[in-house]
Image (cartoon, rainbow, N blue to C red):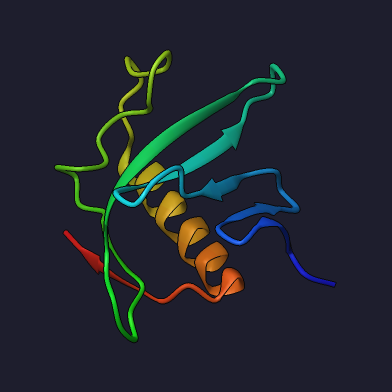
Length: 103
């Protein structure tokens, strides 16, 4: 049994509840469930590529430093960033989307 469910061609949800989706060509959205029942998100800038690699993820501290609104007062700690990157890359692998990572 897979750890992920495909919601759409570029949208997956994990058994743990986090999701990734591409709301456009220049960003990937990571959604994390909260114990309160809501979700918080992080927008990861990407560059869409043509060829063997589908996208380049910008994952350095310059790009991933806080959660999106309304949680933007919460800074991303190094362990949050590492977990997000791991979760996102696992989901991209599941979706069959190839990627590189730039810091």
